[in-house]
Image (cartoon, rainbow, N blue to C red; front, side, top):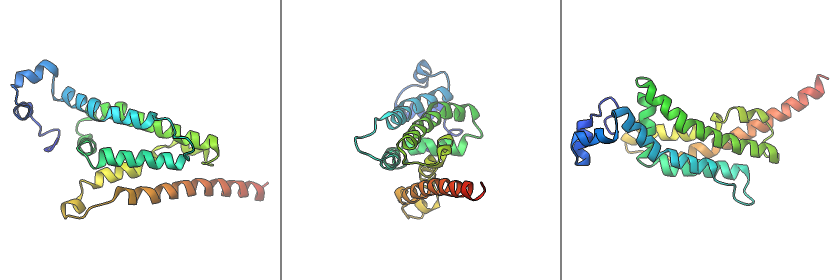
Length: 193
């Protein structure tokens, strides 16, 4: 992962694992299938756990979304799992089959979990804008940006970035916009009818 998908050679993987290259081929048909298994074992179980956890008693949807994001940041952005996400973002366009696998196995599950939280918020009346459930990416985007920024120039220069400082204001802003759109729509209906 450190050198990127294209530069990774199975010879180097075998050497680092302390096995013969042929041993790798006993388990994986090629580099792509090995990388898919890495995603399947390192990220998919985490996303499944994060997106299928039952809501804590008495927790608001905002609390649950913040908890989802905090866990994502703690267990992805600041760990080696974040390297996998950054690798997909950086090299996905050159390796569409790997990016497609990541989308099917990780992104769709994460979005489904976020959509379920949004729908719960709508059902409870905590989220007024029903269309937000159509676009759960709006709430997932800040966590992904935090992962990508961990790779950026700020980190190289020795400046840390607190992902929650990005996420919490964005979540508050998203919920406020949802409420504002609902209010403007309601007032617009009153004025123009």
